[in-house]
Amino acid sequence: MADLREDDRAQVLLVAGFVLAASFVALTLVLNSVIYTENLATRGADAAGGEAITYRDDITEGVEPMVESVNRNASSQSEIQDQLSRAVVSTSRRAARFQVLGGISANATLASINWGTRIGQNRTTGNFTNSTAPSSADVASDWTVATGVDGTRSVQLNVTDSAELALQSNGPLELQVTDGTPWVFRLFKNNSAGTTTAVEVDPPSGPSRICSAGKNPTVGLTAGTFNGTDCPGLEYGEDVSTPYTIAVENGRQYQGTYSLVVDEEIDSGDIESDNYGTAPDVPFTLTGVYAATVHVEYRSTSLTYATDARVRPGESDD
Image (cartoon, rainbow, N blue to C red; front, top):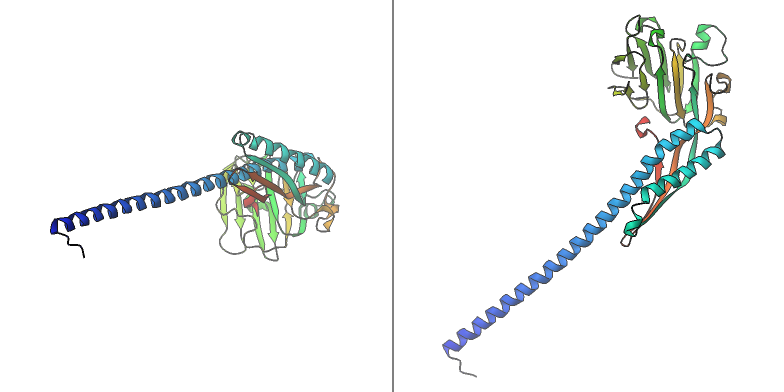
């Protein structure tokens, strides 16, 4: 056995200590490098995923007004499908124009349409009666808009002369959503001149709620707004299960226009054709889009993303 003196042993221990220290430093650098690389990779994936989701949201947001536009302006399913399909492609190109610069391929196409019925009355001096009822106020004012309804969107009332509304105590306009127990919406004026107006909501359970506004208001019934302001408690069809019936009472106590879209098709049997005439001067029914599905694709060097996005104008409407 080699005879190591005390000084030699100390030098060996010192060298061994340096070697171990250097090894630990090298190992730490390697581990830090791995962690840093993984962080970069994860961060890049999140960024790409976030951009894909942003693109999808841009598409759905851009197509929503297109759905509302074709519902207002097209008259047949084929015309609506053609116009909406071209609108989706146009929206997709606009949303993707900056993505191309980054080597990203993004596009969207119309996948399918859920057909419904648009119901409305565009005559500013019109009321909320049906079109073919006799002159008797009771008959003409109280009528059924639709039955067997599973969803309603974009219900809007535009009052053109609030002085023609009834006072709260005089049987004002009522819109009822019922599955047997009704959710009731009332619209009335607060004084004889109609300079202030109000809405009252009676849900199937709980206290009634009232919101006030000035004259000639616009009521976003399914959006929960009264003259553009949120109306607490205006929750369309609250606590009413589907399918439900939409009915009007005291329809003569109203002057203005209105529109809504239900998920039932015109020929479903749930829309009583006898209550409607021909657009635009009387209450009418037209085929319309209740909801649409858009297929979205997004590809980059690090991500391939594809999904079907539902376009439902006024999502809070349901």
